[in-house]
Structure formats: C-alpha cells, structure tokens
Amino acid sequence: MHQINSESKNSVSESQCPDHLRAKRPSWMAWLGRTVLKVLGWRVIGKVPNVNKLIVIGAPHTSNWDFVLAMATLLGLNIKMYWMAKHTIFKPGFKRLLFWLGGIPTNRLNPELIVKNITELVDKEGSFVLGLTPEGTRKKVKTWKTGFLRFSKNLECPILMVGLNFPKKLVILGETFVPSGDNDNDLKKIKRYYEQFEGKNPSQF
Image (cartoon, rainbow, N blue to C red; front, top):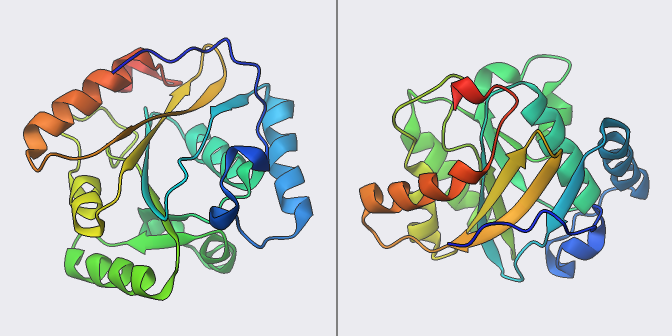
C-alpha cells in the first residue's frame, strides 16, 4: 500500500463521484457541503471508485468534528451513500433528516437486524454504497470492528479507505481493499495503511 500524495489541488466536486452513484438531492445541498468544507479550510482529494457496490470506511475517528466533515463531504460529492451510526444519535427532531441523508441506526444488541436491513437495501437498490467507522467509537480501542469486512465479502464489493488528516485539513478518498477472508490479517493491513493519517485527537487513535 502506497502513501497518499497530499499535494493534489483537487477540491470537492461531483466529478469525484461516478454518475450512477450520485444522489438526487437539490443542488443547494451539494453547495452547502462544499461551502462548509471551504469555510473550515478542508479539501477532499481522490475519487470514488467506479463500481456498483462499495463499502466505505473512515478513520481516524477521534472527534465529533469527524461527523461534520463526513456529512459535508457526502453532500459535496453528491454521493448517495447509506451510513451506519449508533441508534442513540437518531433523536426526535433530527431523526427524519438523518434518515433522509442516508443514516441507518445500529443497535449492537441486535446485529441480526442490522444484517437484515442492509440486505433489504441491497436487494432494493441498483447501486449501493455503505459507510461505517471500523473503530466504532471516538475513544481509543485496541480492536476494530470487523463488520465492514463481512459486509464486503457478503456483498462481493471492495472497501474504499477514507482518511482524515487534521494537520493538513484533508479528507482523502484513498485506496480500495478487497478482503481475503482472513480478518485478523486484513485488519493488520488496513490499520497499517491508516498509520499515515492523524485525527483531531491523536492520542485516541
């Protein structure tokens, strides 16, 4: 796995996302995403792979700002992407908006329901993109969740590894990874790849 060249001058735009993976949101939503990133001084570099099904993982996840950047990137790319998050953030007043933006609440006490929901979505959609955070929390963890590897294998699709680099204010649409079936070895390779990135709170990664 090679290191990312952060010297690219690309700014976030729909051209970084294949046509068939784009959302049918109002144009002002893409403008909003681009504006938020611009105001915060962030850039998105790289491209979304031209595939029909894709798992997207993002790391390091060490701050609430990660969610803001992820949503701004999602809107700026105008990508139709479902994303999984703790069911506790889907609070009254925000629930409908989060669902509309692709949010899928997860309850770790009922993993079978999660698999069922994702399977139904894949069956319904012609193209499918699912985003998750392998760390599963903003706190420092020794072991990453392996659900994204299982989803990738079951759906027979690659994993796009997205990295956050807070010092350089970059969201990097990086390399793709195809699981081998050996979760332990795959996780080692993926975590090694993410060593080049730095979150807002490095001590938590």
